[in-house]
Image 1: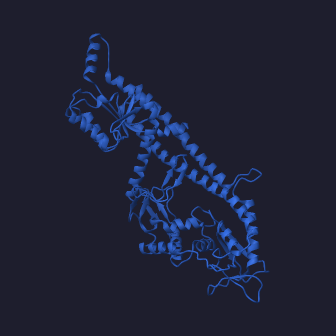
Image 2: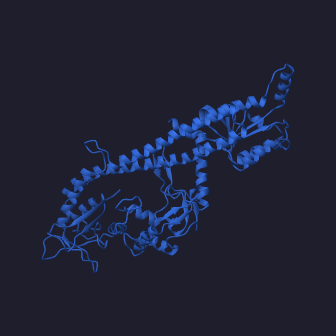
Image 3: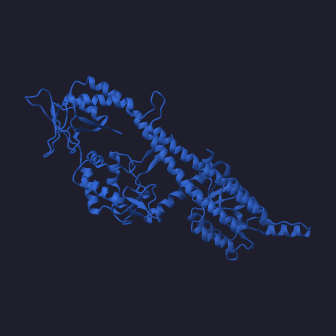
Length: 519
């Protein structure tokens, strides 16, 4: 939690210091006694101490040397307000709120309006003022709600930066889509070799080929997946075909998450349009808009149709596909053969047919083996590949959090160098800016890693939940009285089965099935 707190308190702030008339009188009285009483120095140390303890990023320091009540006579205040209008800060830190202005109601209204419209908070030594709270002007005890309010500002700043970059046509994702690379300006540029694969995938989709067929075709071509694996997943193909970046448009916010009362994060069923940024024609397209639309139509209209008969005889109806052509195998009961026979009816496809019981036997053996080899912790305590991935991601996250801790120390050292006179005000602000930019980049990386860890854990949980489902299906399948019930049981755990059998086989059981489970 230590690293988490440090990240949450890295607000960008400005310091504003101004002498009041009472301060000037105290300084005059001290001078008469031969003493030195420097109001700005005392207040500067006080505010720097607060900023240091709370790990704020000091962007600017304004020191007003005049005490006039009117804005026209306060150049530093006018400079501060211009920067606040430009949303340069998350908050302004002052000794007390009266230091910002005690002019007439008109001038007070100007100051309040600038802070309110820019959503900039005012922080004093004891309170925080959020002028956009429901109450209009909301002050809270710093020690009670500081972390929550600052975290909101950080999240808002990060999100605003991402939205702004997307609107400019930049790609803010961790990795560019397959077929693209990023240039130094975060714009997508085409990777020629991968782009040809993308075109082929879209062409197969337009021709009516399913995702399983496409993955098998890419495997036969020995094309590595985007993650470097030998095999492609259905979900990867689906995401690629639905990704508008391939037609030259930049988009962010299509996948949105919500957190329930128990803290569980889930994908929002319908994304909020207000949180989606779409920037058309942001980069060179790999797929024309016409072909992209054709692919969307194809993938949305392609569905597996199961022929419902009064007495279904094929337990694999709608599930078993030919690996060569991707089409569903159909069943036939021949008078010359006992039982149900499965075959591919695609013209020109030479896949050999087979008796259904043989495939059924092979499937049950495959599911039993899956239970033994599924990616959960084995009985001997060895780790699954998902466990290892989570550990690697967690190690990276811990490394970033440690670097964040080091930046906290670096930031504190800057305060020390300012206090002992090694740095002047301008040098301090410049050095703080360097640390701040590095911290913001790490904040983005930390949020991204945390999301990746959550996704990996959720994926692991889905696979673990698959174990009882497969167990239950195997038990129920053996007892199922009809082919229809068996078919329903299989569809509850299986997405597709691919069947492969060529002319060159050594016997009746020489065939291969590839089983793809749901989830």
